[in-house]
Length: 238
Image 1: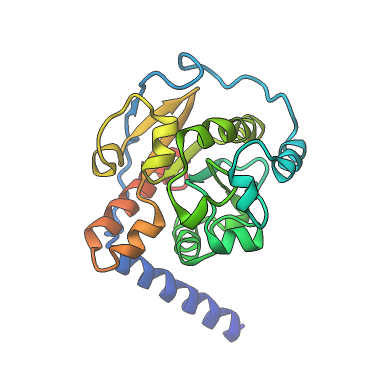
Image 2: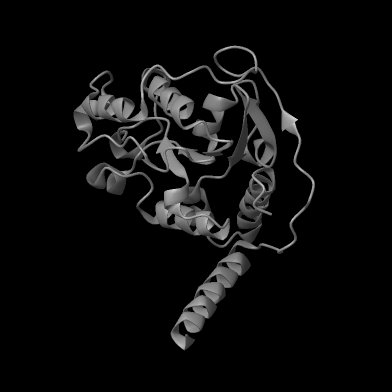
């Protein structure tokens, strides 16, 4: 019994330290953030149409895909992972070196930080779905080109149509631009408010790698936590 209590206390202390490090103030707003509705890709705002393939078929096709030049330089494709009926979905830019080697999304330093953020939101990684807009690593971790995104994005669309998340969190400007093509500005302008993509609320926030590059900037960490609080309220987690 004492060991269980010690473990709970240790976990609580770790979570409190994380909250403190990212600048969280522990005050959850009870109102829901408004949803902005620019024209989403694929037509006007509506409920998502049915998927044309089941999720397993989508992932198998991703693993076989040779449609763009990124396939030539990959170790393996990275379809994504998580709960196949997750209410919360995280979408990043593309796999990095560690992801390319392991075939899993967000497993490097940025992935470790994302896992901490997910746990701070009272989820585990297995409860959510994590993926990227392109499924193969761009050379030297460069930004995916427009043609590469256009070729690969139908896979992401099929994943969304299968999983039907209640909220999508876009990590970074590249992922945000795919979902919110009519919104202009830097991430500091776009983040913190919901947008609509075919009836699904989308919350843009900074990519975890950006937080790592700006490790000493607690204001950025606080902005990310503010964004995640709004997601938690929308999902009824607080």
